[in-house]
Length: 86
Image (cartoon, rainbow, N blue to C red; front, side):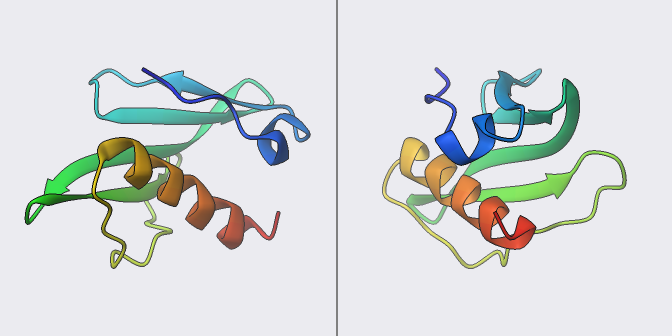
């Protein structure tokens, strides 16, 4: 289940869409799928990788760990926001 799209993203014509797998969330801006957030298990916790859809460049630091998948996704969105300067 997708979380509510954050206000900082909706202000920029962005939205969250489900990916092809249940652990992938697509961040679309202007209707285009620009970023992919992938939540995976990591040593009894969860992590979220943030990748640019167009070139596969990873934007997250790879260090974040969360107790739940939902917290990991929120952390991934925070890292995306930080990297975009929004």
